[in-house]
Length: 421
Image 1 (cartoon, rainbow, N blue to C red):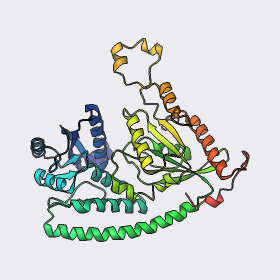
Image 2: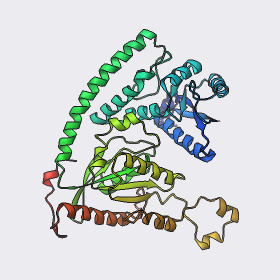
Image 3: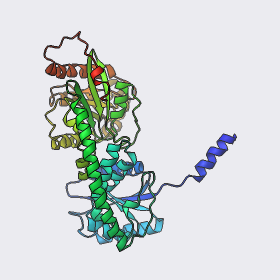
Image 4: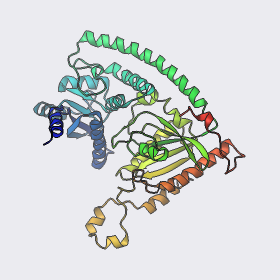
């Protein structure tokens, strides 16, 4: 073993073990077992993104959450016994908890308790890079935490870069924390107002150029597609919320210049405070001339994800914008086997396989939109030319609305937008 290998092994041996977590979800009357499993799979991914490891799951079928502890008393005792026996560090719920539920659960379980919103807020806090994103997330997090401080531990004590916390905040400390939070909220709002004014001025300067915004569920490949189209060094990881900052780059296709922005990914039950705080970042979507809705067609619940994104866009009041629907990751999706391939498959394999018939899928979504959907793989570049062709055609339409007398061989001067990306 070389000295470098020994050094690496020593570093790995001394690396701290990730904190452990158990996941909890309720099964409502309208829910299916598979749906709840998918939701918990997503929650496990969020937990991993935070830096912890989900080691067990608890579900309970209830018509409505228990007003005091979210789950029933019997299930709570079961969770408590598991936490104590396996020395679990945190319990994460797939729904939002009321302030009283969070206090009661922490008092009962004697460990950190997260609900879905707080988990997402902490991920955003760890991932934010720009001053605007950091300010937005901190504001959302403080607003969410204000009524939820407990005796057990205070989420305020969690800092970026890890999942460890101190314990034991007393009554006086909590009251002091509340005063500190209110002061910080006021300061952050003032700071965000100044940043938003600067952003508005910057976006105002972009008038006269077509703006295209990429939207989609988190981890569908927007950043990979952005990197493919712009050759820019944009972070792209196989993690939920790999990037939470809006990125804008200049692109030119067939002499047409436009600005392409990669916006934060959507997710089920995105925290209300976070949406409010990110309104200036989401302005990239509101002010866009064209949306590119990226879908991970390899995900078993991709149609539900499409619904979540469309619902969020509708809430933002932008559902009337032209949209290019891009079914990404076709290279790893389970394509419908051909007749020849079926000859070598058993009936059980055909019946149980969750195959996607791309032809039927294309026909189905083509009926719902004036723009025919695109099927591609951003990671490998498969059918990137098909995407470029559709994008170019739609950008041209938007460009001609701004410049009605535009000629195809015309080349616009990009210098006026040099500093706007």
